[in-house]
Length: 234
Image (cartoon, rainbow, N blue to C red; front, side):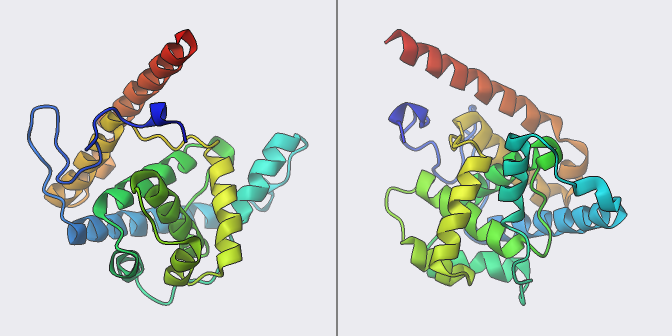
């Protein structure tokens, strides 16, 4: 991974997450896990209602090879075992057994949000794919954020998957993200504030005040373009 993709601040992913004005968000690891589990539960309930209401032919294969390949990678996450524990307990396993810090959960959530924005081929979290999707997202986020990580086989054991299966899912995940793993500082801070307001307002922020996060994504896209121009001029 090119170092130019990383945020410029050495502690950009440090917790507590500091805003531009110097204030910090009050997000401890247990709070991040709890609020993220709550958000994902709402996502799953909404997505499963949408799937139940969809027409049988809505997911038919198209003729374009690129779109078909994307759908195939999306389907790789389907058909997994439905978790026999709560989402909170599942997410907590990674903090307990793989020492995953809260910032990794934030970046993993950012990746899931990007996958959701893929349009018709977007990845939607449901109970049938939660185990595979969350394990893979946390693995990839940990590799991006942390200097040292447990092996894929260790993450696979924590997530209840086979090592070879997780390796294949990681590759599908990367291709779905188009290998765009960078989460710039502005977006990271926005997700921190997003989770904090979930705690403060009991979910009201998520339902009503989404635009600030969207604006941060635009800012990040501008930063990425500026980095590419600087690299090309060097």
